[in-house]
Image 1: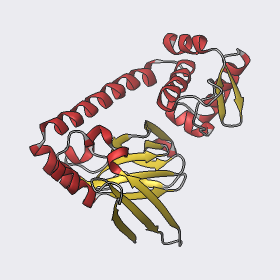
Image 2: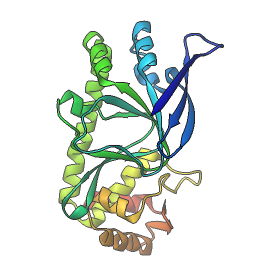
Image 3: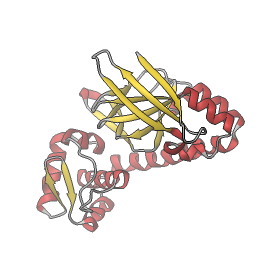
Length: 258
């Protein structure tokens, strides 16, 4: 059961802070304090005061543990989701129990709405890569606002178009490139999505070899062998799940050649 308590800011009445207590069947209690006007500025600027109030009253903030499922394939889409903190993977289970990671979500990114617009159930599943905080807003409310707000409608059209372009490019990369090119492309994708740590070289996400293989459309064994070859060639270095890019030009070249 979820218990949501809403408090207005004493400093600025326009801002609503949400104090959320997440009550989990396993007696897990998590508190979050979120200001949506700061966290979701990209859509906030397109909303009228009335629309902002509607979203404030509807929004639910939920915390997820590492590897916890957010939604499953076949579920009925009900909410627009915005990742406020953490990392999320969108994936699809395939033949023989293998999963294919379709997309990686980073803060602040919206997801889970395509299936609603297509009037179908989810064709993918999603899970938290690490402890994550997600804002849920009813898609019925979003649809109502979109019908009257052209600017917000174009914002979502732009996002859908951008995601479709990435999906098209990844299909080509994952089906036409050899394993070295696919893995190099995945490492570049992760760097561009999540950035680097303070050393300016270590990718700021730690994936298991299986997850890296699922992202690159290859077996775990192939991912391990290819990573080892990259290390031997001085392209990257490994420290457990940490991947440090040593020669970015070489990595880009491998990805381009395929």
